[in-house]
Image (cartoon, rainbow, N blue to C red):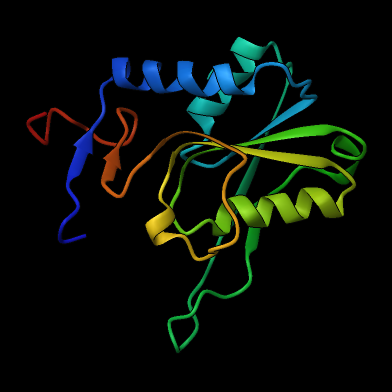
Length: 160
């Protein structure tokens, strides 16, 4: 992150990003939003509201490093039952695609459940992605910078 800077987004910045992302998502019929915790909860809720998607579910996935500091298999702390996903158009939402592991793990699990996954993030970071041949289906912006969303920190303590 030596050449990358920290970018503190305002709610107005997020509103602009959400508008851009939602305009790209329109025209598709989604049955369910799966928000990936924690970063995807706020964008997922906004998207669900704007696109009038009534069913909003949560997925929580974590990765643990082994001795060689390689990411291990995903561990799902929360995930919707297959019956909620089978045969449905599922919009998977997160705030950022950094390495891509979380979004791709949820995508694979939705496919295994018989759902049709489509992924959307606010920020896509291809430079850091662990998957050269994969990317989110939709994203609002591409960056290499460290993004701090308004819901992430006590900004008053940071002097922001």
